[in-house]
Length: 78
Image (cartoon, rainbow, N blue to C red):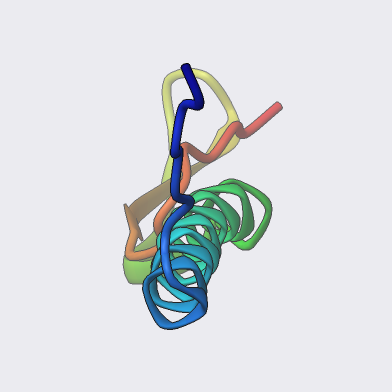
């Protein structure tokens, strides 16, 4: 008994390989977009209001700053 096994045609094999390559490249592109988003975050502090007034009882200046973070990352003020 002779078994006759046939493989897939070269056209179908090429279509499968191209489809897999496109799927992998799309997955890598989405992954890189996510990684890039993590490293490009920044903080941006804007002073919305600022004033200073002399405090007679404490004999010192009182400085008031109102800030707003308009960036995409948390800001820390020390």
